Image 1 (cartoon, rainbow, N blue to C red):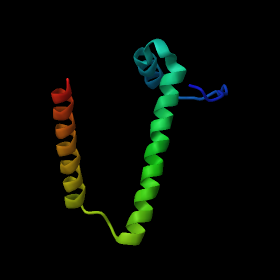
Image 2: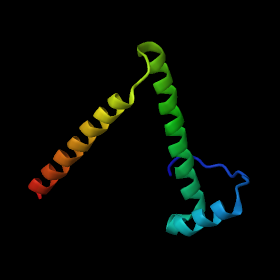
Image 3: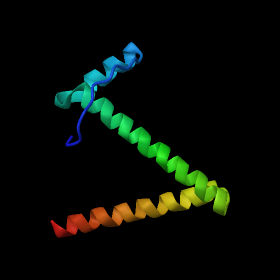
Amino acid sequence: MSEPTQKYSITIPRDIAEAARARSGPSGLSSYVAAAVARQIERDNLNDLIQVAEAEHGTITEDEVQALRDQLHQARKQQSRGGADAA
């Protein structure tokens, strides 16, 4: 991390802390927790954007979500095929 860091004291359930410590690997628990918090902030920001979009354009249906998932899946398949062709 290139950003300045600050030390904080947090309280989390012991089982979660131990599971995180076991998975943190060489980067350590602090990096693991920081990455998890960063992902949660990204999700929160995306949820905020969804709320704004739905307020302006209406609720997104499950069919629309599935259609977008299908498009993403197809794009990933094409991308991985392209990467294999380039190798």
